Image (cartoon, rainbow, N blue to C red; front, side, top):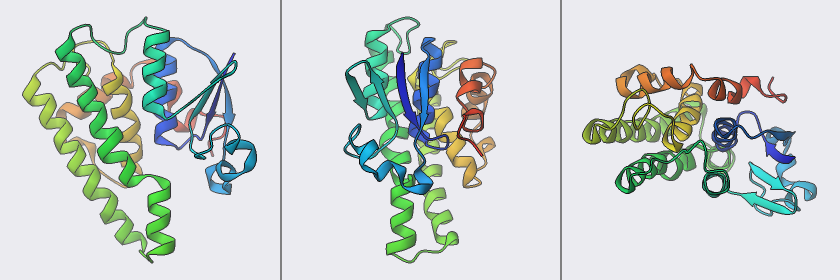
Length: 213
């Protein structure tokens, strides 16, 4: 059985949990508590020297970095597919995922916010303003791509979930912690509603995990 090293509130862990569920792959959930710096300990760094979650272990293979893990899952377990067959559609889906994975999440993840708080003396109002700025910019771009390509249906591309939906839903969860109102982006809000009707997305939610509190 695969082992998934995860933290319930981690956005990158969340997106990987969704992908695993959509693929119908069960992995043993091993909590790594970021609040107690468990990810910086020697035991976890022996698995991932960067000290980041998630990590996925399959026998002797250790996989890190959620984009690489999700792409590996897509190649190792091609059905059900999380990328469309059409080459141009795949590029569009990857661009949507990259808006979240490259331009939104990295600016709002825990280590960046801890640096702003502890090393740069920023208070919660400043942290809120920082996060809201990049989240809103990212969702603006995401919504604009959905509108311009007109490939969306119930999901980002037609009526089957893709990696774009996986990334989007995990980022929406994080955005709500910073009081970002998703209703401002109607296409995104509609897609999230369809995603959350699926068991794969429901079961991956942070508060459904064994380490949630």
